[in-house]
Length: 166
Image (cartoon, one colour):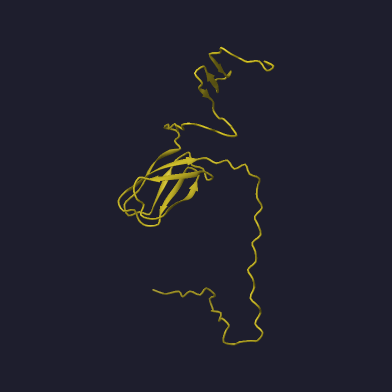
């Protein structure tokens, strides 16, 4: 306990198990940092054989989707896409799962369509929200008299479809 004292002229501070440290040239290493606000002049993402939150993908010529397999992907992650060519229409991310996601196009790719992506993990700490009740649709007034020509006819199968035999 330094009781409001300053620790100075120290070459480095390293935890007893080596899981975190601060060097004299200002490098902080740690397994995890929780901060309220992060300000940085530069962001560098480290890729390894085991894990990479940014990479590349391709939607093949004539296809409208590509499944991307990446261990960093979690169902609650956000995915940011940057196409390296014109997708010629809209696109969206769907089927977000554990270890994969799917990029969809509104129209088939014209030529192979490469893209880069960045997966950002999200930990939602907001309190659980109760779903707002759905407002009931305004009901139409009941008819005042019977009109035998305005009813609907029930079909025998109830499905409204016809089964065709071969």
